[in-house]
Length: 153
Image (cartoon, rainbow, N blue to C red; front, side, top):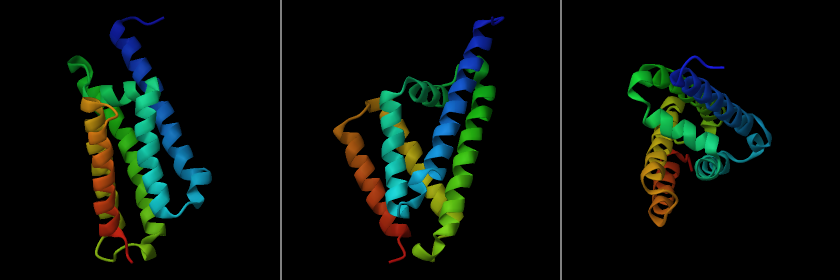
């Protein structure tokens, strides 16, 4: 029983946040961990975008994070940052572990920020245009520029 629609909404959002946190942690700490860093990072982009397209929980979480109800905005933004912070920590740890494979001009922190910016941009495109040729072009283009930039070879 929930006292209000807002309470139900917050509960649903927190459930979706938990599911997304589980997906991210499992993705980076599971069997994917053995993939080369290029494959791991690209696979995460694709799988997370596919999740948005096929998993109601993910699409609810992303839509709510980007467009929170005004009366719950502060709470939703604060809780959404929990996912961003966890993902940021996982990525920064990964970039530090693989630092020898990366362009020495970029710190793990810089590579993490750039990667998260790509992910955010792709989600915005997904929110507005869905799965489309335009999104596929943006995935390919942004990934190639990102990887060429941080690749140490």
